[in-house]
Image (cartoon, rainbow, N blue to C red; front, side, top):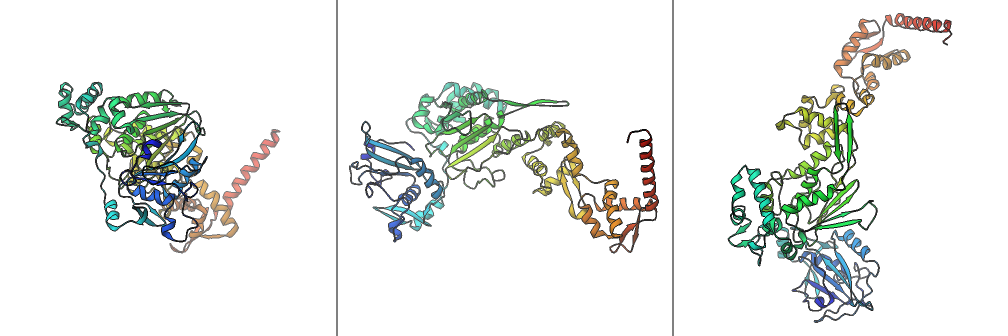
Length: 584
C-alpha cells in the first residue's frame, strides 16, 4: 500500500478513504483491549481496528491525529523504537501483515509524531476476527459483522485483474521491442511463423491484450513501456537483493526490474546467474555440473509469481539471493483452494487468466498446472531438498530454494533413469517424490500405484516376508552413491547369514517355533526364501523338522556335530600350520 504524508492524511475522510484516526489516551491506543471488561470496549483497540479494516478491503489506522475534520496532529509516543515488534505482534496474533511507519509534523525538530498502520485488504473469501467475532466499522463503533456483509465476503470470486481495461492508456504506451519478442515467441511455440509479421495491433488483438483501442492490464504488464508500468502498476516490479550471508539484514546489492515481462525475465535470470555457482559431479561416465540455481526452476518460479500474484497488494515481487539459498516473496496468498498441503495436486486456478493464457501460448510457461510440477521435479532430481513453501500465509507466497545437493548419488541415479527412457515415458514429479520417500526411509510409499509401477520398471526393489514387505532403492543407486555396504544391510540375507543367526539359538534352546525364528530373522528373508534355505539345510543334515505345517518345530540335525567337528578340525590344522611357520 502507498505511504502517505501528514498533509495528505489531514484531508482524508474516515469512511470514504478507509482510515481510522485515533488521538488515544495520552496519545496511545490499547493494543488488545486488555483491562476492559465489556467486549464492545475491548474491541476499540489496535487489533480490533486491524481486523475491521482488513475486512473492509484495507485501510489505515492513524495514531496521533484528532478524528475531527480537518485532522490536527496531537502527537503520540505509541511504540517508539518498537515499530518492528508491533508488526510482528500483529502478524502473530491476527495473521495479518501490516506496514507501519512514523511521520513528523516538523521533520527538523522531530515533533508532532504520528504512527500509521497500513492494513492490507482481506484475501478473497477470508473474514478476520477479533476475540472470535468478525468486526466491521459502523460510524464511530466496531460492531459484529452483519450476515449480509459476512456472506458477501465468503462468497467472493477472484476477479481477473489482467483482463480489466486500464483507463488512460493507449497502444502508443506499449513497448515495440517487447511486442516483437512476444510475437516471435508465439510464432515459435505455435509453429505459426506468419504471426511474427502481423502488425502490433493485430497481434495484440488476436491475443486479446487489447479490445478495440482499449488496453488491458495484461498488455501493460507484458509489453508496456517501463514508465507506464511504473505509473499505473508499480507493484509489478521485481526487486532482486543479494546478501553474502543469510543472517545479515542489509543487502550487499539491490536491483529493481520494472521492464515489461517479455524483456524483464531474461535480464532477471542473467543477473541471478551472474552469482550462480555449480557442484561438479564426476563418477565413471557421468561428468556434469549441478548448478546452485537451475535456470528452468528460477524462470518457472518467477513466471508463477508474476502470473498468479494478487495485484491488489502494493508490494513488489522480492527475490532474496544468497550464495546457497534463494527466497522469492510474492504479494497475495495462494489462489483460492490451493494450500501448502495440496500444492502439487490441486487443479491450477490462475488469478490472472488472460495473463497466464498469453504466457502459455508464447511458451513462457507450460500448460496450466505444470509450473509447480517442474519446480519440484527438477529440484528433487538434482538431489536437493524440496522447495520450501512453509512460510506462505494469506498475504504472501514465500518459496525458498536450497542450492545444497544433499545426495549426489540420487542425482546420478535419476539422471541414469531419465537417460534410459523415451521422452514420453520419463519420470514425473510424483515418481521422483516416491523415490525420495523410499530413499529417506519410508519403506512403503504413500502412493501404492506409483510404487508398483516403479517396481515393475526395476527402479525400486521389494524385500522382506509376505506380511512384512518393504521397498528399497536398487543396487544401482548405491553403486552411484559409492556405498554398497549400505545396500547389503538393506537387502535379503543369504543362507550363511541365516545359519549364523539360527545355529547359536538352536544350540542354546534345542528347538524353535517358526514364530521365534521370524523374530530372529526379521524382514530380511521372504517366506519362499525361508523354505528354500530350510530345505537346503535339511538336505545337508544340519536342520531337523518335526510336526505338521503350522505346528512345526526346528532343531539341529544329525550331521550338525560332524559338520561342526570338520570345521573345528580344519581350524585346528590351520592354526598348527601357522604356528609351525612362526606366523602366530
